[in-house]
Each structure stands twice: as C-alpha cells, then as structure tokens.
Image (cartoon, rainbow, N blue to C red; front, side, top):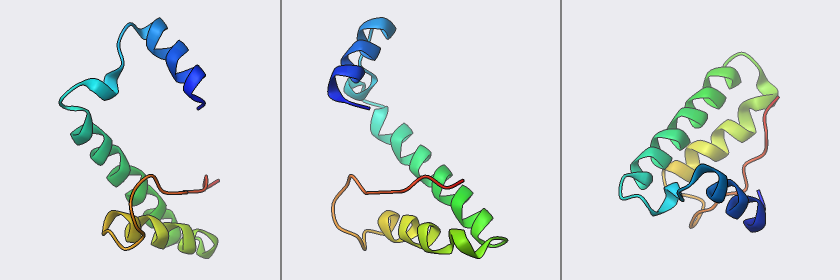
Length: 74
C-alpha cells in the first residue's frame, strides 16, 4: 500500500491505528499468525518451504531490521 493510499484509508477509517499504543502487539501477533500459516502449508507443500523459513528467520531476528520482503504465498 502506498503512503497516499494509507492516508486515504486512515481518513476513511478516521484513525491511524499505527499510532495506538497497542498496535505493536497486534502487529507482532499478525506476523506470528502469517508465519505459522506458511509453516503449516510448507509441511505439505515443498514449494512453500523457502518462504516459510524466511519468515521464521525474520521473527527470530536473523534477517536484519524490519520491514521484511515477504512474498505472497498462493
């Protein structure tokens, strides 16, 4: 999402959720959920293994500072 698109979203929603004190916790939970999703599917589909491992490595701090360049998994 571009910065302009995000501004439009915030204007429509009425609030920038990233400024809320609880936002970092929700963001971390979301990152964990999408990592677990990738790992679950990697167990059954080897084409997902590389991306799942990257996500685990990111969460464990092995891939440098955020944001990470995660690819979509279909």
